[in-house]
Amino acid sequence: MAARRGTSGHKYVFVVGGVMSGVGKGIATASIGKILAARGFSVNLVKIDPYLNVDAGTMNPTEHGEVFVLDSGLETDQDMGTYERFLGRDLGPEDYMTSGMVYKTVIERERNLGYKGHFVETIPHVRDEIVDRLKKSAQLGKTDVTVVEIGGTVGDFQNALYVDAARVMHLANPEDVVFIMVSYLPVPYTIGEMKTKPTQNAVRDLNAYGVQPDVIIARSSQTLDQKRKEKLATWCNVQTDHIISAPDVESIYDVPLNFERDKLSQILLDDLGLTPKREVDLSEWKAFAEHAHNGRRTVKIGIVGKYFDTGDFVLSDAYLSVIEAIKFSAYMHEAKPEIHWINAKEIQNGKLPVESLKEYDGIIVPGGFGETGIEGKIMTAQFARENKIPYLGLCYGLHMLVIEYARHMAGMENANTTEINPDTPYPVIDILPEQKEKLARKDYGGSMRLGAYPCLLKEGTVVREVYGAERVEGERHRHRFEINPEYVSQLEKAGLVFSGESPDRKLMEIAELPRSIHPFYVGTQFHPELRARPLSPHPLFDAFIKEALEKHQ
Image (tube, rainbow, N blue to C red; front, side, top):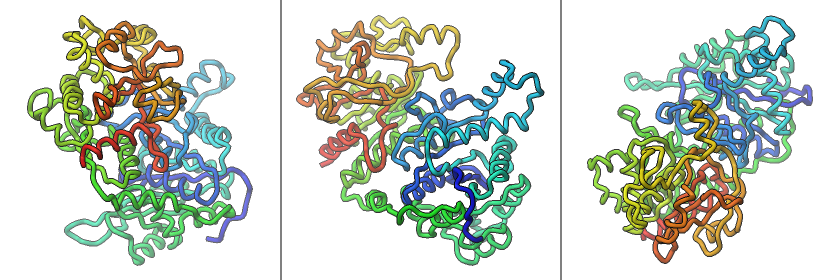
């Protein structure tokens, strides 16, 4: 295919999946954005989730994985976090859509006579809303290229409308649209040969929508050989050099580098009729990726959580941003993290002795909701405090820290959160006043304290030293319950330091113990993991890993 030289309109790259889910469309989309940005183009990445939920906030993490929160407060799929980490910048609410969002907008418009009394149908009205949202994301982002991941797999009933919207955009401006299929090539154990037929069938399914892929990213356990490339090219009507091999890799951060070995950015620029603004510059990224393989030492981190119940498997995706934030800071210290999953319920019921936590260099208690494993987490906070193990509590992990301290250091026997025990004699964690009304009317979706808020840091504290500033802008929140201000004075008298506050001094954002008492014992109401980036790790995770490495030595 000759390079396209057409309109100078906004460019779109649509990424669809073939054969099976879970083959890495999100990583491929993020990597495509990364390599196009490395050529000097501004890029925004859009995730389309075909489910009817209006957002990801009400979904069970053990089924869907982590809920990622944007600055705007929108609760999104975890792929949005991957996008931000690869691009190294924040994305907006216009970069995410679900079928629930789309249909809700169309129905509300119809209720307000926005269609002037005409029949409202899936095609064209719902499809046009999808197209309008994609164009809006490009306009608000002020970017050169939009890369769109269409969730699901080709042939799914749920995502057919999105594929059709992409087809319509291609039909209107073929020079401005490229289609990429990320498809899986199995290597059956009993056969020992990589099979292309499932991908051929997936391309045929895509053709049935009126869409022909320009590029195939061939996912497999092994590198694609030339024979398989030629076979796919012949039967899928795709140029041989447009078949990109994407074997399993040790680190997802190798993927952009692998794509560039097959010159994917140049292929896309040629197909979109774009002239490169510069040579590929992935030097910083390459240096970062090498740290994933070449750590001089190890650091052993225990994550004490609750979202592990997925049959016989551990769903680490429920804490994906925490895991990546650990990696980024460990790599910066030239260390490789050994991350261990610890089920809080097993500590609570005695199946796992709390003393076993002593083998870890650092302990993290991440966010969560509900009573499952809560006493195990409180026991974890107490053990880390008494044994001076570096501890980082994230949202719910802060609540556990405060409850434990209230019970054992401030004389508040049976202190608790009203989320678990509304009748506790010491409600040191309580629901936000405005949240009580929302829960009374069962207003659960998108109604928590969500999004980016500033935080004031007290002088002479650990976090003031870590951040190197008296005010932090835009740490992201996702919670209904807060530290009860009625007990702050009593807890402070017992030695707990509330080192971060909201600008109006009404909400406690961070609690800690002084370094004279504990090397690193910090809990945050916000989620710092949502701000961690490969090339700019989060300072709180940096400080935590630094102290964990000290303990290791």
